[in-house]
Length: 121
Image (cartoon, rainbow, N blue to C red; front, side, top):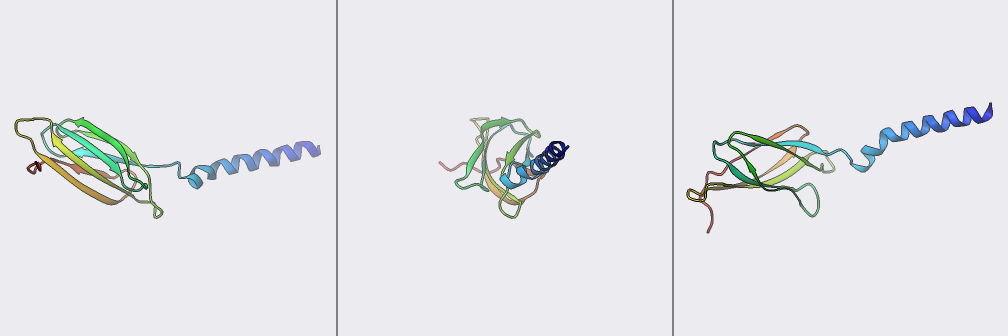
């Protein structure tokens, strides 16, 4: 009977500790939707700026016009995410570029990307 009580307590403590492990280690990232808000197909690169050093989470990936893609980034100590992006049009003849940073992101937020500017040569 003593053994059963000990096993139940141990099982209960094990289950409760599993609830807190993901939060303690930051296992949950933020899911961010990258929206191409233009009709042009774009090559998009995204960096997670919440981590040190920044980590590339999307590399020169084609995102069709008016389409979106989801990425996962980490959260800083305040629970928010920060990212930067670059975009270039797929069309080499009429090449356009764009870039920006976005901070204070929450899980489920969307970031609009576009390539409306002339590219630096």
